[in-house]
Amino acid sequence: MDLDSPLFNTLHHIMDLTDDTTEKNLNAPTRTYVRDAKAMAATPADVKEHPNSYVFMVDMPGVKSGDIKVQVEDENVLLISGERKREEEKEGVKYLKMERRIGKLMRKFVLPENANIEAISAISQDGVLTVTVNKLPPPEPKKPKTIQVKVA
Image (cartoon, rainbow, N blue to C red; front, side):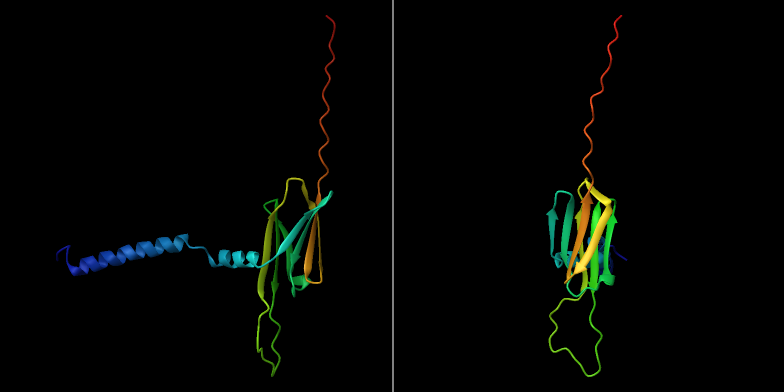
C-alpha cells in the first residue's frame, strides 16, 4: 500500500485532529474554574479600611447563615462563599417566572500583611455578610543599640 493513498492521508488527518483536540482540552479551563469565576463575578462586595481593621461587606441575599463559609487560604487569602438554594417545590405550585439567581456565591480577597488572621469575625444581617479582620499592631521601632567606648 502506498503512503500517498487516501487511507493513509485520512488516518494522518485524524491523528492531527486528535492532537489538536487533546491540546485544546488540556488548555481549556475546568468546570470548577468557570463556575468559581462566574460566582465571583456575580457577588458584589465593598471593602473598607478602618484605623484598626478591614471590613468586607458582601451581598448574599437569600443565603442562610449555615450555608456561608468564611475561610483563610494560603495564610493571606480571605475566601467568602455561600450557596443560595432553590426553595422546595410544593404540590400544585409552579413558577411562572424565575429571575432570582440561585447557585454559588464567592469572593476572594488578598489580605494585607498587617491583617490579623487570628482575629476575624463575621455577621450576616439582612442579606449582607460583614467580615471584620482586625489589624496587627504596628511593630515597635527598633531602638538603636549604644556601644560603650572604653578608654585604653
